Length: 295
Image (cartoon, rainbow, N blue to C red; front, side, top):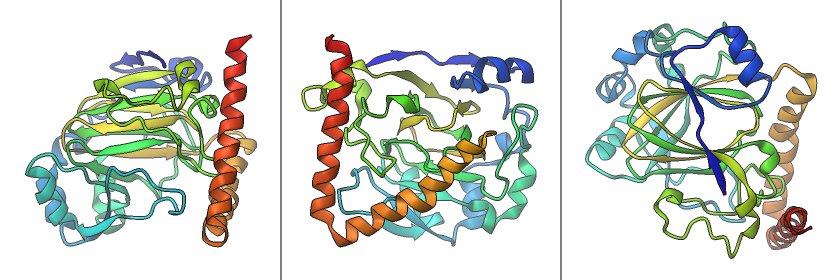
């Protein structure tokens, strides 16, 4: 893989952001955007435990989903308070995915400002909280609705690997899914992942490598592939903004209601055939990518 650093700024003008990052689909880290929000000083584990500690949440472990499991299926359930106690005790490879804490505690909306000076189209009904214990992993994927994301880290550090959407076949994307077949777990520790012998096209993938620190906001353009590893127990919030173009919005709708429905039905009705079809297709598309570099 060829990995580059992401540009980092403390602040940025709307014109600079639009011309150099939004329009060019280039990621960016803004270190000062969230530090003026009340949330930056106010939000912590104890505060969340106080206001939503009794709410049951779905938990996800580090095991990659298999060929027969619908995406976003939780591996366990606990109350938010129980979860906080667990991850505060040390390394715990469990994370909470897409928890809309704002449904349970709407007063939290007043603790941050939608950054509409940078871009429009925010889906204000769905700000999302993401939490993870130390060593927990969010495996390589892209967001199914193809929204632009502003992902703000509030507590803990997180290692992030990013790729443009167009790198999908070098990343061995599973057909009709948003996931990569390859395993990038602990990619920075040189423990054999990713496996270039099994996934040779990965050698030619071009992406970005960064560490998000508390207070950092990462701009992820629509469709970007991302893999995240929690260096410390922590939490972050994602603000989503729809693409400007009708074609971009249409692709997101298709992924949500067309692509995902087809995959779910096929996994239930013809799981073995569907799995074999996907593996064959993945290999064909990766081979085409490799051919580009052999000529």
